Length: 409
Image (cartoon, rainbow, N blue to C red; front, side, top):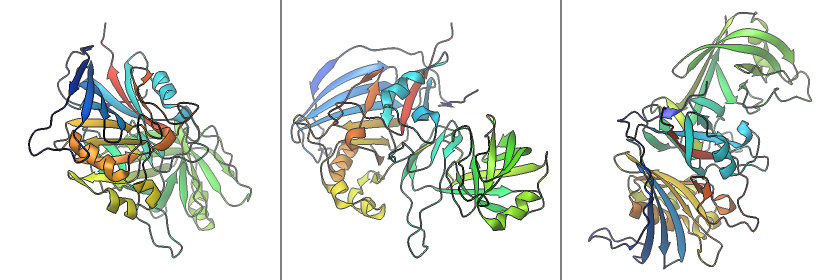
């Protein structure tokens, strides 16, 4: 049974408000928005605790969509869904939103999330419902030094939003062997152990060098926090292409030095796998990537963070469609944001402009997500922004979902 992040607070009865209000916003003294004050706002209550605003800003011009979500509402939950529910795959945000509703939970809104490769594999680690869909170690430069990881957005099991440069720290403990490093989840890494689960597909990747990988099948026994206990269930193989158990995993050793520890393992033996993100902020139920962090403690860091997270100047200082996520200072409000771009009606924003917008709306910690033609916000099944691709909504790698628990009859 899939598990959802449930925000633990008083559960209010869902009320759908259909009142449309057109208003010119006047900002109070001491809170003058840095990108201009000519804003026209259309505001609608989607349901209790969820407000959708479309903001027209004359200065850009810019068309902005903002979804404000009250995290204290106990009937709301969040998921990070990957296209086709696999590590590799492409799917539109609206399609992922539609198919993710079920008899218990209804999708309220969706936002495109991480940057991705041509095949749809995302750049950063992804966690959904506490399960790792993808995890990678930090990149290394030519001299072997660890490059600064990119920022990510997450929610803990207690419903607290977090933005940080998380680093995957995994380990494996096999019978009679010292603890070894788990290099990745569902991503080939020839320097260590890799754990593959059903999100990779039906089989592990095949290897053209038949002696490059040694694999063992695992059945999941139990989990306690970030530690999962598996039992060796077979099959055992070499060269990749091993079937992945639906409720289990395959542990692959991609280096000759690791083979002795795997060869000594017998059917029924215990294998302990630790999956952890540092810094430790509590057990993460959800994590998606982005880059860069643009609001830190209520201040814009768009230029500095962009340089530290290896973004090029044209990405930072040219106007593009933008997608972002952020939270309020007291962590009670979560914001989904999009800015249309590359259109006559909306020019797109630089990252400093996007950061200023976030701050003017109340964002205290803010992260830039994949933008450009990927920028998409879905509310109640409809794409509410204007995607910039001539063909319309672009298939992407993954998305963030806001869902509401259906009332029990």
